[in-house]
Image 1 (tube, rainbow, N blue to C red):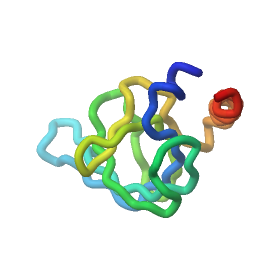
Image 2: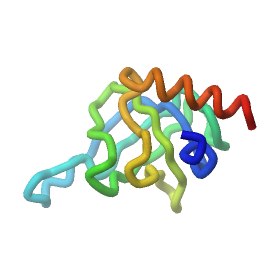
Image 3: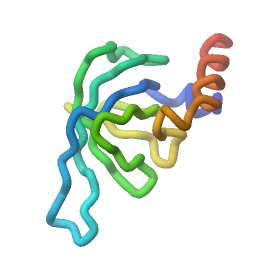
Image 4: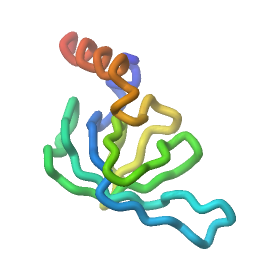
Length: 108
């Protein structure tokens, strides 16, 4: 866990405002998601800031509108991406991970 926290540019919780489905795919997934930051553990991003998140692969969470997600992410251009197969997941199921993040950040 300490490696994930150290390498991540941003560690946040964000709420899904909108999802854009890529209907050109055989199995459509959310490719673009508009998120609003609700909590910042690490990074320069601010609470209430909205941004576009681009899903990159099968390890990214399956985003659902109005749900909140813990994200280990980084900015690339105008959008954000998660680190491949990180601990990013629904925040409602991430309480143990959140406690570890808080503990790790107190050490730094």
